[in-house]
Length: 347
Image (tube, rainbow, N blue to C red; front, top):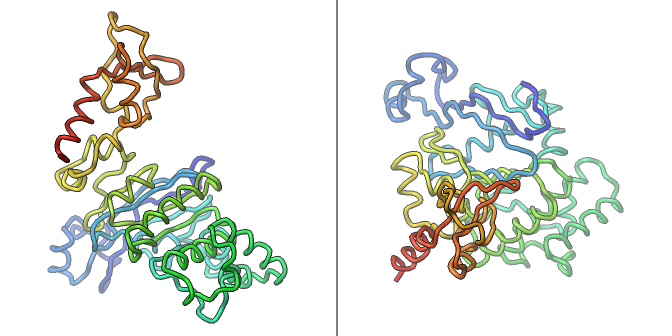
């Protein structure tokens, strides 16, 4: 299927099964077995099992799950660093699963860039040349790639370190070099495979903020793999949660927290500070004829904690308005139920 204007990435019926005669399993009764049952019966492991999703242009789409859930295998299948067993991947209208080796090389050089947990920097090259390495592979002349690399060094906050070598940089700075290198080719899609999991918590938070800042400026399509729910909620426009190679739930952060699909997701989100994630859409009630229309007006996408001060300071309920129409009312009780109850739990 071809991509559309509102689809940067489309994944349909994707499978990756490791083991002998893996292709025979798909379409057979064995395909319905759990991962454990399949391995016991056939010796094969279903790392990715019939996964389908779309990613819109400019969206940050987070894939998360525990270790062994299949998330890293999935992201590697998107550019065939790991060959899928079945299914299709379409990027910017191009069928990746049907691409030739030459087409794949071009895709990886021009359209898609990856940022890994292990930085993979060239130790004998300075920052400026590490950032420009992808341009060098493409045959861009030295003066042009140095100019472009210099712009990216500035963009990721490494001005003054152009002539440094990787071993002279902290882990966070090295990951900034990796991020600049991924951006140098001006890809339409960035794939992140747990890029910050090896970093100290404070540096990790700084790098998350850096991704948010860069996204606000560049509006790249991003697929971000993580095992950290807080990271997923902070970065993702939508989140895909995996377990044993399968999709458990796809939704906006507020939707995942407010309406977990099952006990597995419910356990995941049980410790999340709800007021920091839930939006007014999930706490509002339907308007009634006797409601006052004098209260503060806010969007359904407003985070509860951001709305709390104005809502509690007003003598009238908060109005939730979408596209000029009143869609809901939020009473003080609803705000207090989320914010105050949460503070009480922490205390």
